[in-house]
Length: 153
Image (cartoon, rainbow, N blue to C red; front, top):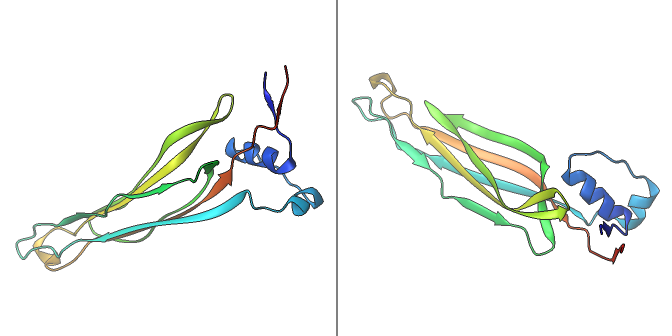
């Protein structure tokens, strides 16, 4: 049988993970918001300058990885952000949500996030010495998962 969610905070976490919105006033204030923790993730890279003959340079940042602690997962729907600074002929962010776990039957949430910035310097002889870059900044919530307290038989 299905597990009962025993608190308002656990219900809010489960609903947040499926993208639902729920507003609590005094009950949530009494329980606090320790189940929602904002996480900021950042990656950046800068290329070398375009050569005198117009050949472009490229860069990839190291693959940055964030893992949720035991009993937590990332709220994918809370993701906000993108590349904050960028230059060159190609640039962007590679963001991946990995290692999903089942939060409630039929609902999964990621426990690992990876981020990598990439860029390519501008091409052409007119851009000799010009660099490319990308800085990726995102925020998302780390949520404490509901605890199994009781079950129906």
